[in-house]
Image (tube, rainbow, N blue to C red; front, side, top):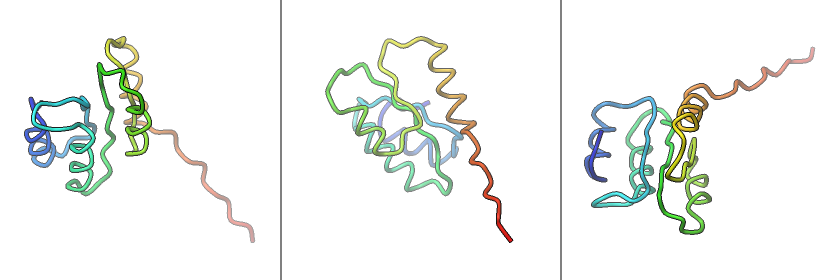
Length: 101
């Protein structure tokens, strides 16, 4: 767990999490910039679920443009968060293509 943007980047780099829950409004930074930095530092794509209490237009679209695995507006139901985490950690498998010949 990290309490600000800088700590979030340092913590993610150190522990290489399987998933990141990230508030958009952070002390000492912006959650979108933190997500970009984390993705550039980690060798594997790490799913990011964004959380926000803001109702500012365009936040969901910006999160999705960054490849967000989820976007939840506060307050949210715990079940919704759990389902979003489950989906992010277990994405649907793409069907294997069958080669003809």
